[in-house]
Image 1 (cartoon, rainbow, N blue to C red):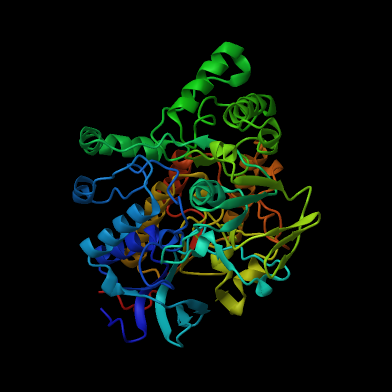
Image 2 (image 1 turned 90 degrees about the vertical axis):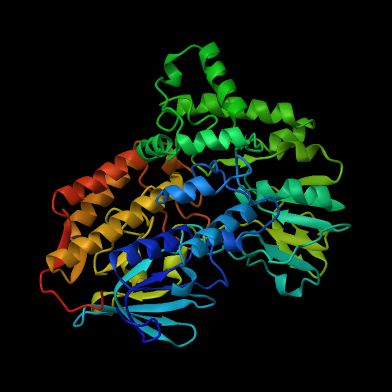
Length: 543
């Protein structure tokens, strides 16, 4: 086994979030040496950076966690139904300490470039510190929501107050007491942070371009009895998550909304709304995403709930979305809509009254100026492929990944890309990724990759790469699945339209975690169907 300081290793991993930590654990079990590069000063990935007020997961804590260690499941006690960012970060720090992973991680280091040597069959990764690391395999665990969509408003450099992005929040507390604050954006981070900021600021302006649907979290403390029951039943609960569509243990819907009575629909929606969570309405009926009439029923119900929570009818109308529910990321909240009943909160429709520029003391709109002390940009991420595109990755014949993806991201199973041998993606484009419980998808992907490396070692294979035919067929399959639903109709970060110049493409496998797992397992059962191996074994660095 090679030394971590030698510049040569078996596997280079990029990213120390859920994916990277589990990868290190599995690779070490296999006897491979790995170097993990992490730009942050600690582990956590998205939970290291996203420290904005109100940040928490929208998947229940019991399911948004690892399952690989029975001891870990038993010893970690979640305090809330939906864990906050600090609690999730403490959990990941505990995992890194418990499994002695920190010594394999190089913190405060960014992978700037990666190039494949076709003759040697190796990857060389160059960091921002100038180090070059050569490895047989490159695994990109960079996350789907990790590269922020940075604000580019004219005049921002002239602003004399403070401004923040929810995706790169300061590690020290931010105090808005006595301030006039503007929050730009009403996606998940905006919807979570707005109630918290409103409680602290003297005045809050919410600048909204497109309203989003948000379901009540119904968050609560977890009792000792409940936690004990979860631990006892965890294996069966986890199997239910793995075989489900969204990666959660909710029983699947069995009825179509268009085939039941209005009273039956109402009862199902009421049940979901009272239960709360991201699937409050989407989990009620089987035709939610495939039938616009069925989707319309859920839309009507959601808008009715918004009107019941917001006292000003005009504000309620502004907060009521018109797109197909679920085709943009559905949010979960704690008192989000009720926040607009506060006297110190104003909602501004920037689609009707757009932002012109930032002034030294505020925000200039088409019609008027808002004077503020601080600005919070809740403008989201360059999602799914942004963090990958941020690295200068070059495969066979020095072809950049950006060129291979010039007309949209392409991958086989979301795991590999033609022309980039021995490079693996964790929850990459064309996998369930952001439409699933990421903890479930991450463990499945990591297990698949590590099992593949073991197969290659045992069979004397030096490289693995998808065939063009397999990648093309998989892309058609993913597209056909998506086109049978309402998802592609929306303008959202799901299709990349939140980024200027991005080719519009829906590259998420939408059939669910269970069916996707079956597809991946069948590929392996068929002798890694769709992949090509270099049969000439190259002497590696593995133990």
